[in-house]
Length: 124
Image (cartoon, rainbow, N blue to C red):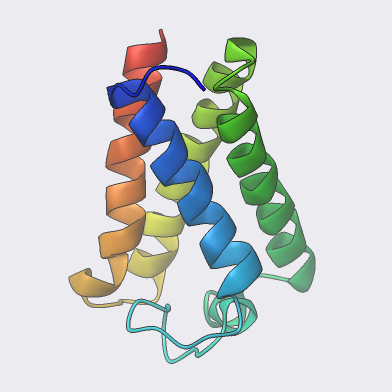
């Protein structure tokens, strides 16, 4: 295992956090779901996005999560994965704005964006 430093901590937090949201908790209601949705799929519906976007974003986020974790041993994966993640988190924030969510619902996406941006700047 690589040394535990800020880069490593951010990679683990982001990677495991994404896997948790998309693989373990996608069907669970949270206070942060967009609009009045109770599941991740309903959240995409609340944003007015087609079903294929749900699957595309899910595949990208799970792929980025795996790449961030594997990136601990294969550093070449880090910059592409975290770059995609920054773009996805900007999109997530835009969707919360689109449906006029209260700011608190944007908190997880904002935190993920901040951590992703920090990791991207550290990786360059």
